[in-house]
Image (cartoon, rainbow, N blue to C red; front, top):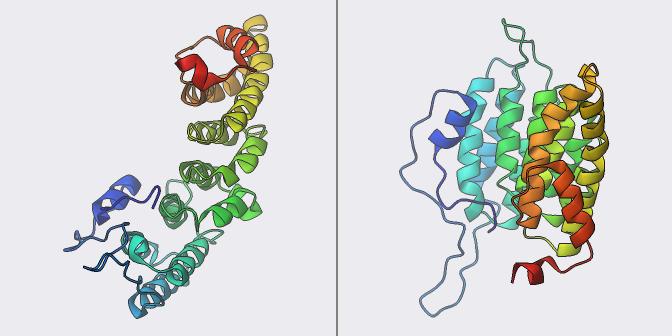
Length: 275
C-alpha cells in the first residue's frame, strides 16, 4: 500500500518527536497481502480484538488531561506498525481514534511552548495511513481548534501532502494563499509532493505558485523597508522553488527564470519535452 513502510519501529516515531524510545517490536508487519500456497489471496483479519484494545488504550490516555500523553505515544506507534496488516474496518477504527488526538485542551509547558506531542505524533502517523486518512487530514486542515496551534496545523498540512493523494490538492491549493506565512509555506511544501499526479493538475499547481510568488518577489526587490513582505518571502520562497522543481523536473532557482520557463512551456507536453 502506498506510503506505508513495510517496517517502522517504535524508534522512528519517537525519535522524530524527541521522546524516549519504546522497545523495538520483535516482529514486523508487511503492507503486502498474504497469499496461500495455491496462489489465492488470504483474507486479511479484520475487527481484531487487539486493535480494539489498542484504540481504547490510546483514547484512555487522552482522557487524563495531559498526564498520560507520554504514554499515548508508544501506543500510537504500535497502531502505526499494525495498520498495514489490518482489514478495512480496523483501519477505519485506527484513523478515527487518531483523529481524537487533535483539539486537546492542555496546559502549556513550563517554557511557554504548547504541549502538543500527541497531536504532532498523530499527524505523522496519519501521513502513513492513506487513503483512509485523507478525509480526516483534509478536515483537520480546516479545523478551528487545530488552527489555534500553528505547529500542529503545519504538521497536519505536511501530512496531507505526504499522502500523495490527488484528492488533497484542492485543499492545499487554498491553503497556499493563507495569511500566515508559516501555514502558507507548509501548503506550498506539501504541494511539492505531487510529482506523480496528472500533468494537467501539476500545471494548475505550478501556475498558482508562480502567480503567488512573483508579486511578493517584486515588492521585496523594490522596497527594502517592507520587512513584513520580506519575512513572508523568506518563509515561502524556498519551498516554492523546491515544489516547482519537483513538479516540473526543472532545476531553475530564479523566479524570473521560472516565469519565463512557465510562459514558454505551460501549453507544452512536459513529458515530451523531457524526451
